[in-house]
Image (cartoon, rainbow, N blue to C red; front, side, top):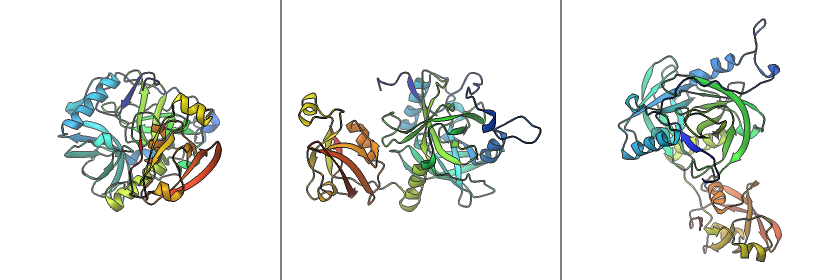
Length: 360
């Protein structure tokens, strides 16, 4: 993390000092307005806010307490553990009472309470969680709930306007605005499997698990963390794309957990000597072992192949390759772009349960 200036702050139990005003600047034509009124984002809040909830997590285990303490140190903000506030969540299925949030919001708490927009409190139970993507699904009684529409995050472009909603306790419900600053961000250190939307819409401690939305009020991401020097936000926030959240959600409902596949390979970052020998202008992870009978062997991958991209997304380091492969489920196909003897190739492999991809 030495390359990242400042500390990574998660949405754990903290208290902010004062109200921070978002600094995003919008052209007036981008904002909603009613005849005779000033331009406003209020319609976005009115549509999306009923689906955003606060989550209290009580009676956590030592693991959760340590995670809370870590979040407090990183954010350098006062703890509010007495209130039991953990973070936020988004109602995505009103008929079944299902809510998506971050796994680090839930921890291993034994007592979960969801607080709706008008203050109503509901007991919640854990349906399932995926620590690798830092996502979890919880369930409350399906009584007069409002679900948020989920949009296609693959349509996002850098420069799109977005709004972040959450409940950074004890301030209360908060809305900030900004743009999409980057896509497919990884190697952040937030989760094992990373494919983040980067935004300058402020994300505060306690916003974890809440919604990043289009100006139409539709969900495009789950707010997860930010990089900043303290409890304030420096304009570098990260949200898990809605399409990834939907995949994890569906897998948890179907199987109780995410079933990940493997290729059966190990790989490493090339040494300077390997770079010269392989004539690689840019460092790429190099496969150094292929398990017998594995998906990699059946697909035609070879020892010495340098992997340049996964499903069209470039990778330059072994840990980045690992994070990309962790986003491919059991039975799904993955497309690897490789260099073999200096020649580019594309190889498709179906992930299976043979071996486990490793890097050194």
